[in-house]
Image (cartoon, rainbow, N blue to C red; front, side, top):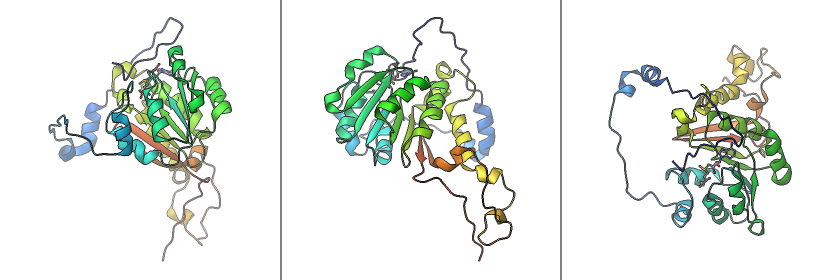
Length: 270
Ligand SMILES: C[S@@+](CC[C@H](N)C(=O)[O-])C[C@H]1O[C@@H](n2cnc3c(N)ncnc32)[C@H](O)[C@@H]1O
């Protein structure tokens, strides 16, 4: 399938163990009988709701997106000035961003040297060739074009790739920026599971990290304004100070970086 084309490393041998998704029954058990009840979900070819980005998409070529991503992008790409897309392929999405964000610098990276043909510096579209998990390569892209306020990962779609790029690029995202990971549906397909932990599992770690102050405390009094037990400071992972919010949508995860380092929350009792 073109959309989820698996990136093969340049040098053989390429031997990666693949892991099936094993939690189907655990998921049903956790849902309980009402939510786990089997119902039928159907395909639908009615025209999608109109969005500006959808209109641009309709006129685009050499691009492959799930339709329901378009309004998600429209909601997320509100302040984009410097955008990095991981995964260029046939170049269509770079053209779509060019139209949708006429004043932004658009940067694409891809492991395939063929993608370089889609670089168009005169139109402020730049393509660099390298591996999305190679932090030296990512740093060179950041040095040249960063900091980015928007990163969209539409690269190789294995868990290692999604997590590796996120771990390096999210802490280097501009405050207030957004990091979008697309096609996390691939996490459920054995072909893309190159480790037992998926990006969805990793998202749960991000949720835990966002709640790190509560992991380190035992009672709400430690957050209460004016209370003698109130803590003045806590040691937490850096992630806890920069994750503003996490949106988990169908096949897309959007992580928003806070504008300012986050402070401990404040409880009020009156
Ligand atoms: C799904 S396509 C990108 C599609 C494009 N963004 C679009 O919307 O039309 C995925 C691309 O990721 C690239 N890719 C795969 N593994 C990669 C890696 N490790 N680092 C960088 N790019 C990779 C592939 O070469 C392929 O061109």
